Image 1 (cartoon, rainbow, N blue to C red):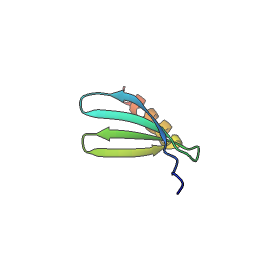
Image 2 (cartoon, rainbow, N blue to C red; image 1 turned 135 degrees about the vertical axis):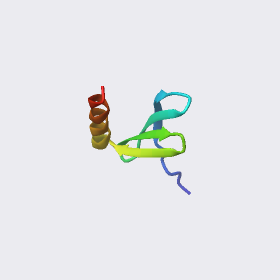
Image 3 (spheres, one colour; image 1 turned 90 degrees about the vertical axis):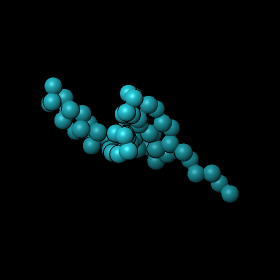
Image 4 (cartoon, rainbow, N blue to C red; image 1 turned 45 degrees about the horizontal axis):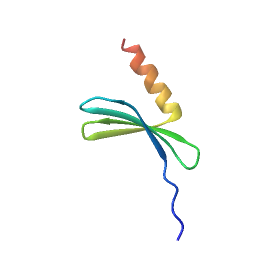
Length: 59
């Protein structure tokens, strides 16, 4: 039985109620995850970059 490769994860930012982390997937894709209480939003690299632009526009 072979083991399925697991993604390497890294926490990017964290507060009491929110968490942002990324995963380097075994297939080479980087995914980003935004946890807001009981809601998690998943982004691929291009989507994450666009989301960051959106957040910067709020400033």
